[in-house]
View 1 (cartoon, rainbow, N blue to C red):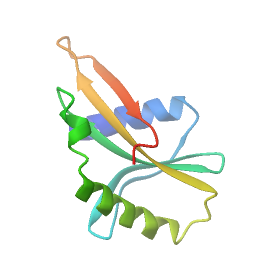
View 2: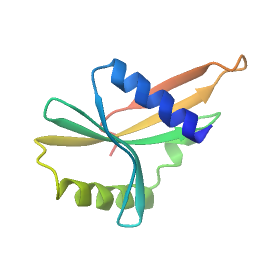
View 3: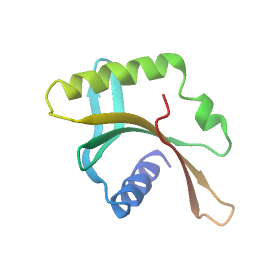
Length: 107
């Protein structure tokens, strides 16, 4: 469900007015699932597809550190007014439907 989850989150954020700037962007030993922007604001999005709330726990302090380093590498080449990190938790229902919870300014 990983790639499907990323596509689901990208479509949702696009519907909310964000532009997908990058998918699966890699630097500094980390991969940022989605980088999206709206106005002068950029969000670095970590997508987790899990059946339970362990999605939040999966973004450990070490993972956050790696994502920050990758984001710094991306920001070094882009003029951005403001940025933040977002965690998107995608969960599948028993009927196959997908649900989404977003944690904005996650860390």
